[in-house]
Length: 167
Length: 359
Image (tube, rainbow over all chains, first blue to last red; front, top):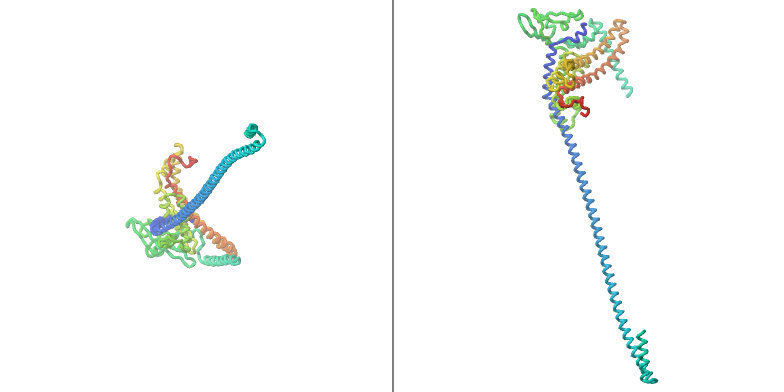
């Protein structure tokens, strides 16, 4: 069929022309267009990527610094609390020691006083006993001198003294 | 808004119908017939009908017994016949008298060895190349000046072209070719934009589609073919000449198939682009031709009657062609990248992709 053959008819001249001119176009565009364009695009992309990376790094750094600060603050707070607790404990201990010491001193003083009192009481008792014996002897002497003989008087006195010592 | 959006296409349709019927009458008054194939094929003239036709220069490499090789240059076909003494013969009686549609043979018993004439498709291929060149050297200048490199791209042109460039680079070249994609990117970009521009030039009034010429698409496919074979790695040739992983008795069958495959791939590229670009134009011209056929068969009334339908349908096909222009440019580039990628790919030896499920 002639019409279809027209569509497919070979044309060597056209092949040569297109081959040469397309080749030239390819070489020229590669040098003057695609080279600058693609390198510019790559540069732009790497710039954008770098900026993003930098921003990400800066953010990470800021986060790290913030975390450091928070940790330092927490540590300081904990330290302060520990110091306060220790001080309180020390004060408490000191106070209780003081109280204990005072109490012991008081007890000692009390014991001392009690011992003194006991000794004075014994002294007084002994003196009283002597006084009472003198008084009794004097009184009995007086009575016996009046009523009884001397022998009798002595016996009575001895009996009384025996009673006293038994008491 | 609704009324406006309805009015505009309707107005266009009426306008196109009027133009079609007027040119139908003009054609009917002359002795020219509307022949879809004749309007799609290459020719030695630029067709600005109904204004007129512009003959293109003829360049012949001739060979004759007594003078040997020679080159003849004429500004027009008519000049070749009238002043160069070339003899004109016609295939069909229809074109008789028009030298630009004739077979020309040099005087003195010689014959044309190669017809290097500037044809319509060549002119439009060159126009396409010029447009691509101007567009991309223009935006390359912008990038060099720092616009788009240090700053965001500026303006419709740069944004639009950059988007297309990035599609070729990021969606075609890099996934298909991988590490070596930068080496083949200039070819893929040039092919894509050249094909796209030529496709679109075919949709411009008085334009012709250089990519609807099998010679043009064959040259483009040859570029892909050469790049594929030159870039082919040892693995690529091994897979063709001694396919691994198949029993030896299968190899005699497989090797010819693989060798054939080297050539069928670019052949398919050429035929696909040519057929797609030709088909759309043939359909549009056939639909317009319906007006003439109806007028001839059933009288003028039928011609007028069928005109709105024809125009509406051809408008639809025209829009489809616009889509196909982009799709075919994309497909050609995509497949070229795939073929190149398959050839330049570095395989890992020892374990095959097909054999190792963990790979």
